[in-house]
Amino acid sequence: MRFNPKADISGGRVTDVRGGGGGGGMGNLPIGGITGGGIGTTIVVVIIYVIVQLAGGGSGAGSGGPEQTTDRYDQCLTGEDANKSEDCARKAVEASLESYWAKVLPQQTGKQLQPTQIKTFTGGASTGCGNASADVGPFYCPTDQTIYLDTTFFKDVLEGQLGGKGGDFVEPYVLAHEFGHHIQNLLGTMGRVRTQQGPTSDSVRLELQADCYAGMWTRGATGTTDSSGVAIFESVDDGDITEALDSAKAVGDDRIQKMGGGDVNKEQWTHGSSAERMRWFTTGYNAKNIKECDTFSASSL
Ligand SMILES: [Zn+2]
Image 1 (cartoon, rainbow, N blue to C red):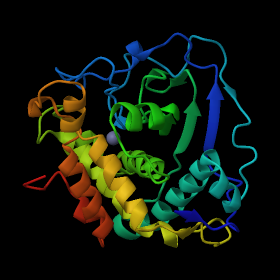
Image 2: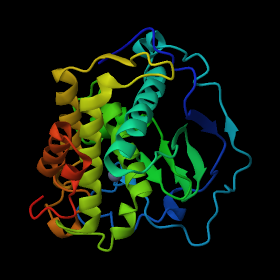
Image 3: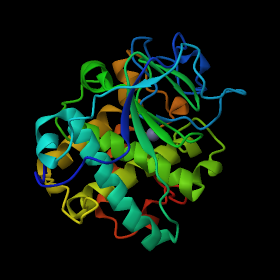
Image 4: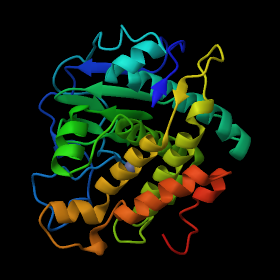
């Protein structure tokens, strides 16, 4: 993966916040149904999840004082910066995702892209879905249409606890998956989720579809542009695809259950197996139309 040094990434919708959600922990997050038996308590089980339900009456207000935006991304102005810094790369990827879906969504569905945003945090954050702690993996909250990310997830959990091989395209895959949840939110797909667990549950279908959308963007990434029409990426190569697939493998439900030291129990799946996640990413990568990502109608996943 290489960004175009000339791309302008000075705008965008990535911010870093501190001071929110103090003392919240995961207790306020409605993450029911994902802590399958056999998963060790040390493994974070909210793996690039979407928070579908709302906290009971919970607003976004944190209990730990005012949230402040930091200067973490102030120096991220160009693709050159993105080639040198993971933080700046995050901004470039967000700009690329927005460019891709702003074009493809209206073309293929007739719906306009509404903005989402990415908020990174350290320690905790207050969200429209309750307070998030550092234990929570990346997630999309539909209530405030925001992607939340504690960036220690990649090294500590995805590579550390789950044994992913890492690489610079791991995070773009995860961001593209979360952006896929935003697309699902805009298309009303989230409202179709009735069953939360099991190998053919709606939850698994929703998650595999987000992987499919991530594959679509990966294929289209090199065609995305900044607001002046300058290409954001110089290249996305086979090594990047391999890294995305390895990450999809690392966050499969069967892998997480095995790494937690337990038996594989399909009835507790919420995101799909490693093989399914890789397959749907690939389906999206090869798709000509978003309809090919219709996991809800698929007879086999
Ligand atoms: Zn997800």
